[in-house]
Picture 1: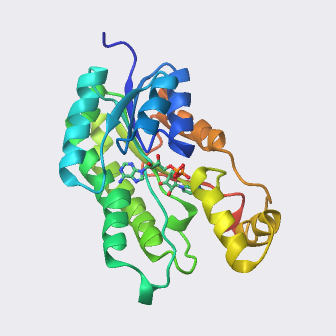
Picture 2 (picture 1 turned 180 degrees about the vertical axis):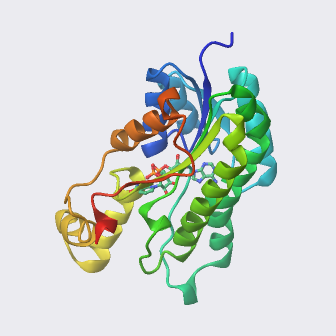
Length: 253
Ligand code: NAD
């Protein structure tokens, strides 16, 4: 039953991860989505015809089991998309230490562990791919996002290191760095900022979120999925260790 390549997308039942999972399935890959094991996540996967792997990426043993389950469900593994993540906003002096640990684990340690455990499968593929969904906050900072920004900067370092180690084995490793994308994660931030700053949702989008951007429009998850689709495609065999910005011109200044 091994026909076409197989992909595991973490955080794949919401936002960018779901868009990437759907796009890779359209591209002809067999796709499993990994997410926290909740009835709603299972239902999203089922509704989109995607295999589901329940795992909490803040736990090392879940990372090991998730790779085993994905390989069993898909009959192999050629593509790993490390996308799961979450945001927490607080000044450093008040930042909860357990939240820091969880964020670093989900957004940096889990991509390392999943890459490590999946490595034999990805290198066997001949057209293996690791795609790390970082962020424009892998390059630049904003206040009150210390754990998120530290994890994303770290993920770019992991991407480049893995690319060097994978080069002779037909496995490419790249990072995608989006600016703001309209997803549940960002809709929540916009609502919070509107409340705390006393602005309308539109004012927060245009004057706060998109202030540093050249193009004053939020990205859609499908825009990120289109870039991931290219990186995963056989045509992109020569692109590795790349840090691909899709940032509305944010870092051009
Ligand atoms: P989202 O909240 O819609 O989806 C994130 C997914 O990750 C959810 O399904 C969530 O359940 C899952 N997840 C969180 N913690 C997990 C854990 N411990 N174990 C397993 N799964 C877990 O968010 P999104 O906006 O689609 O973000 C996806 C990725 O894109 C994140 O890494 C985020 O940092 C990155 N990103 C987002 C934006 C943006 O503007 N939305 C911009 C740049 C980068």
